[in-house]
Image (tube, rainbow, N blue to C red):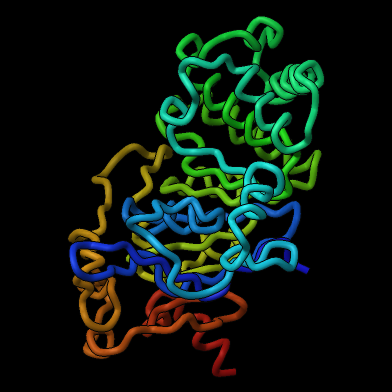
Length: 331
């Protein structure tokens, strides 16, 4: 049974006199010990989707308008706020995109880790401090005894990110949501953080949702991938199948946009145009103004997610990318 089941989730933001849907009908599931990558350009709805899982949306501007988020049999959308506070941090934890903005600058790292242990588990100050020390060791921070009393500004970017992971793991959650966990880190530190997440998954059975725009991160860490565009999932499947044979032109464009280190020659491919305004989506498929395979039907119909050999795609002309699958289906 999946640990997490998200079904038809929609989120709207209030703009002046009307609401704008920024997440539209998102569905996915995740089992314990698995890693799901959510990929897409900035503004595609990745972060809002993940914040909606924990109901961390700005209350005066955003609201969940439809769908359910079932975690271990409980629908978090309808859960009371008091019960939801017990879920956050204790059962589901989140690593935010910019650790400098989410670590308290006037509290030591040790106190910030211990705070969650005291709140959720009722531990004594001494017990919580020992747990904080253990967690700093677990996430690979050197000289943890000294860093326990360091302030965020005294740590490097990579160390701050590790501290954020330690805080997230302080109450042994079952699900970790990592929003762009390697943004602004150099490639060496990025690789270390990704290896850390994989090790934690292997050692604890932790389920992880990784939000990223970097296909390289997906290739290194994820078991399954969901690609988002204009607030919708437009393609979803197992990592190997999706990266080797994309069935949506947007995914294909993302993959072709990756720089190749083998030859180092030629121009870098870019997807033409810009993502649409969520307040004024084009008729039909939202991607059709940027799609080289677009036809009249794409300008008229909104494609539903279609199952193609166990691989989901929201494209009416996916066979243009995989003519071999058409032949296989015909047989």
